[in-house]
Each structure stands twice: as C-alpha cells, then as structure tokens.
Image (cartoon, rainbow, N blue to C red):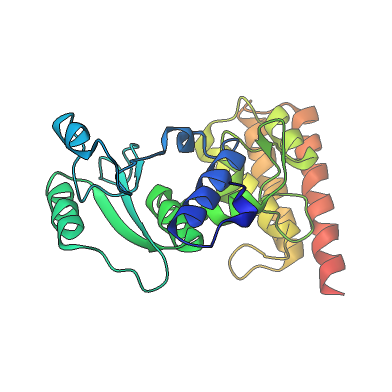
Length: 247
C-alpha cells in the first residue's frame, strides 16, 4: 500500500518521523541508530514470537543514544484519542528506573520535539535552529548575527560550522594566540558587528579597546604587526557595519 493511500494514524506519523530522521542525518548522525520495535498488530504466530522474546508494553521507537544523564530514549507513539495501556505505562516505569528517558508522543511533531529536547546540549544552539540553517557538504553556515559577518557564538564553537570569511580571517591570524586572549577579542569584534559595544563604552571606544588589546598582543609577541593589522581591519569593518545598522 502506498503511504498516500494510508489513513493517517500512528503508523503514518511514525513513517513521517523516520523520514525526517533520515533527512537530517547530516546534522544529527546519531539518528541513524533510531529504530522501531514492531510489537503492534495481531499475528498468527503470536505464541512463537512471545516465546522468542516479544513483549507487550515495549515503546514503539528507541533512540539508543546516551544524553544528558540518560542511557537512551524510548518513545510510545500515539495518535488522536489513543491512550497508553497499563502494560505500556508499567514497562516505561521500569525503563525510567533503569535510567532511560521515556515519553508519549502524539504524532510526528510531538515525537520530533521530544527527540530534539532529549538531544539538546545545555548552552548549545537550539537544535531546531541548527536543522533550519543552510548545510553544504556536511558543514553548517550557522545562525547568523546581524550584518552576517559572524555566526552566533555557539555556532562558531561547533565543529560542523563552516566559518564565514570574517571568522576565517580572525582564526588564521590569531591561531597562535592563547584562548584566554583570543576569545574576548573575537567576541568583542562579533558583538561590535551587531552594534553591541563593550560595557558602557561607545562603538568608537570599543574599537579603540580592541586596537589596544591587539597592540598588547603584538608587544607580547603573541601576534605579528601584520596579523594584528589584519584583525584590526576586520574590527573596523565590524564598526562600519554597526554604524550602518544604526542609521
């Protein structure tokens, strides 16, 4: 039977969920491990299957990926007014006792939200935004800041992020700089491009502060004069972008 001819229900929602998972493996390769437990439906060989290990109450979808303190995620798919059975509730309670996350999802959108919430790492870019960003050859452009010179900080720290031209310039010229010095300068320039100054400073004073910090790194031989000039040029472009945005 073709899917377009099937009546919408738990099965079609589950098919949609797995199609979504397959279409987003580039961003979340762990979704390749997600699988369905075929416990539903009546079978002529039910007794044999039970003897071979099939059990009532086992949730429909399993994502065997440890995350945020859980060993894995079990989803029971429902649709419409369907409710969980006593056997399903009991089995999910036992799973929770063993350190697994369980949830009841009413349709594809609900199941997708549960999966993204489960995989979401604290302090990282919301996965929904990651999936919505442009991806090319396994690399993500990231969620752009105003002016599009930089992606937002969580994106810049992601191994799958494709750096912007501006980000590449800073990284290439500050590759040898200690992280404790490089990070605040990069943040200041990125914030400046979005029109945000350092503390209570003006945009002009923020640019001058960046210049002074770069000069300090040159004096300490963390940067060459040429490298400092390249980074300062980026900072000046960020300043011009900020002034443009304020007009």
